[in-house]
Length: 279
Image: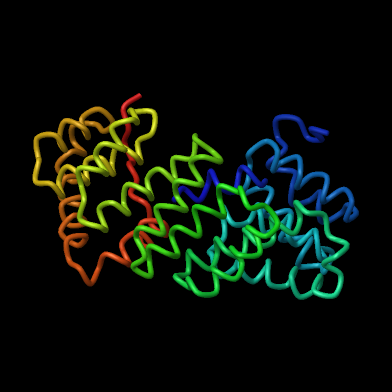
């Protein structure tokens, strides 16, 4: 699963074109309200690192509490480690534990999803399940939570049950490439590459992660020519051999029964990526 896209979905111009250079001094001199205003502006502009820096400065002063920590965690998860992000969300949960009834539904949902994502990224599937249950209780059709539930089930070897959750996620959000990729990987975990290929053939070069998994499925099936053709549509020629080697190793790992439950969890924590994609 692509963790940057899952965060941007959660996450004046005071200094003009030099705004990035103003964040530090402004937050040092300004009020909490001014700092939050700047952090949110940067977040809305997609400048997550700069936004996280402002939130972090506010937090170091003890200025962020409760719901503001949820806001900070939602942005920081794209920049900070899962362990650091989990710490932010955990503090928010502790502070709000006696006042959860006063939280807005979207705030409770963001907290549960944020905790679940961090737990999955750390490989703590049992702890993640508690937070996913929380999210699905709030929003039974939430595609992110359903996708996460599928990852947890697949990691425990329940591939068929996992695909039910991925299917629900796709019904809720047909554009979820994360759920689609995870569904395909679950088919590979069940040693059914043909079904993974049929699913991933519905994608194109605009979804390179899916194309990487399609090449992976072809290699699992032993069709190196089709894998190479797939990669040639998304990667520069000098990258093909390296990608083929990486994917071949992962295909071999998927074929080992003892590894099948862990491979989708690994993919969700460290998805295959391209550094050079044809423009």
